[in-house]
Length: 393
Image (cartoon, rainbow, N blue to C red; front, side, top):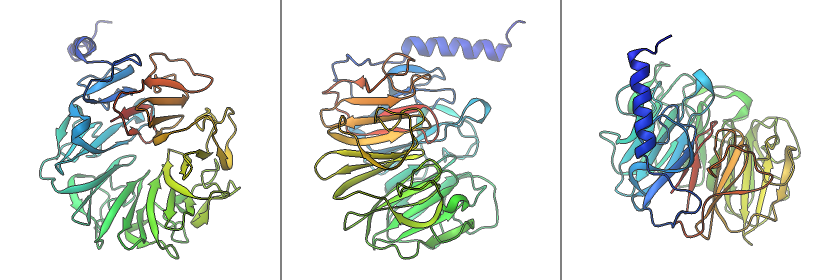
């Protein structure tokens, strides 16, 4: 059967992008200024103007590392359900977005996907962003803005509609917010007073409010104070308190709550055996903590070796990962993890069938593998929420 004109055109465009998209291997000199991305790309979520996958880090079109304050990947999934996208907060307070847009998650007033970054019109003065499964959040002047899918009331507008919002809209009744996290169909906000507020889908207790009720406006997580940072996975949340305790709530089936259980919790529980925690990170269904001494601990889903402990067994309590030192940033999708180290390198571990580790192969490594070498200038990594695409900046 002959290809349709549209199919033929897409093939030509993809071939052209293959020739023109700048790629960087693990042997690159590290002088390239661009944000880099690799892995799945069927929705243009790598932002290089193409819809073909990348086995090695390719430059995100027109977005330099020096310009980016924060980048967050959203979506994921497979086949027809795939919806990978990304949002980037620039240091001038504006936001760019790219990738899938089926639920308006690019915030550009349309439902049309785009394979290159474009500025979200009318959005300025932003201090934080976060991309979830099919929606995005931003903080502006202490208030939260949201856009994308509202099927589970994850936009927090208080309006009785599940229609997607194609441009940013204000979340109801929240101010003095310093950070946000978007998960799979729910949202989290950390206020300056150390309290945590949640809204959206309540399944698995992911709102932490003591029940599994879906909420269309923000609710305070009870009995949780002095929180310094939050990290949001697909359907679980981690919170680091001022005294170094890590709390967790939501889905626990893969051990992602770290409390020696595989039971969901609709209120915060202590992650076990952790002391002197400096930073926390949540991947799709796992958790990581960088300790004050620079060591790294991980827990949760590990069926594809995404914890990096040398096994494929889920961990219900944290295990110290002695082989991983100098970690500055960690992110992970459905079955893999990537990390930026203090020497400027990017390494990864776990599954690699979609080239999500960026090492130029589609072979699952026995341990860690290198996507970018030391001296590359990278300090942060991000991935799509449940997919197989990664970013370094």
